[in-house]
Image (cartoon, rainbow, N blue to C red; front, side, top):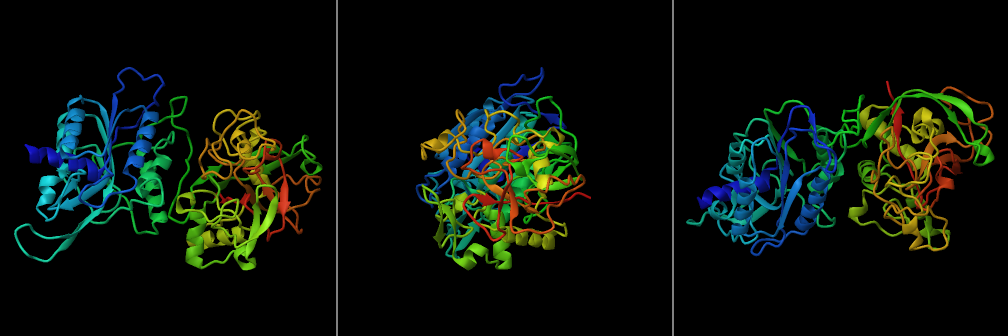
Length: 559
């Protein structure tokens, strides 16, 4: 009996099972749940403090973050940390016994997980495994967990495991045969119909605990997408896998095993209860950022409340185009730099412009791997927008994407940028709307900024949580599904700047001035309050300029 329950627990740790339901959206906690909608229950376990094998850094953080995400998705979550063998068995027994038919179940485990003899095993913190056979007696197997949950006739099961580590130097308990390293998980078999088993990495491989970041690599990437409204489970997992591959430079790739999964499963649906029409954000490979298709149209470009270069307001029409959902991150740019051995202009001249607490100054030794103050970023900040890149650097990145994908990547025109930021023909004052922000909609100078700089103009009664840059895609999207269009960093556009360019009133796909000395920047930055954050606000700098407040996003024509 003990061995059977051990098998059950290991299953949870190592495989990460997902059971899907056919084309049925689930409402977030706090919303009205339609009659007959199933209960949602989750078991979240983080095993960090191993007593006899290598301890891990992130399982506690992983479990806490996963609980918060599942709370948002309306699950009744049981979270437990650092469980020994008996507590692990007890935890699963209690969770299993509380289930009933048609429940939706989510199981998450972060910790050590091992594959042995065609089974996968979850490892409790008191496991003392010195030879091979002890894996079976001190670990907990996967298949029994699947069988037991299936016997409860639950409707859907989601199990995500960031748990595939290794145990080096093991040999058979009763022989002196050579030592071997046991690592990774085993391909699951006999999955219940309607299930998807997800490993943090492929069979027989190891997963990155990601010690320089607050979460394991798989968990970090999964959390970016798990609570996205109107995203099916397949879309969530596709984007998660692509991010893991990109960050690990193809060293780690999540594994997903489906059995009898029909239709799409949605954790969250939009406010009217339906699934939005048209394609959603998509990332096709490890090189491309997440892209959003934008339907073109006509709008009134410019503003009467800004400077003379925003006037006159004039009618402009843009064709369909596809734009990156967020600004290009440090990690995105790093992939380009590593592959091309590219040297940015800041590296060539040996300096960039930074904020020193009083004013913008040039500082030696600053480049694209630095933050707004010129300090080297830690790896857990690679999700922030890349800074200290010139227009020329941004254009080089676009040309590389064009080479890698065959798509005509480029910087957006000024007209495309303003159309996208202003929610298309609506042309709102800010990306989130016309009024001061209330919800978390962007990174601007705010109450958080005032804690550092007391004399700055700020957006009162608003706190985005950051003084300087925030991770890309951190806030709510606008009506076109774009993020960070207002604030975080100024963004390079393709156009040459001309203060009088609006006067001729070029109506169809204006490309900017034929020539000039400076390129256009749009969108405001982390240090700007409302006036300089308006979607119609124009900024401009030399193509070689770089600073701690400037980044970019990319686009291409939609065919």
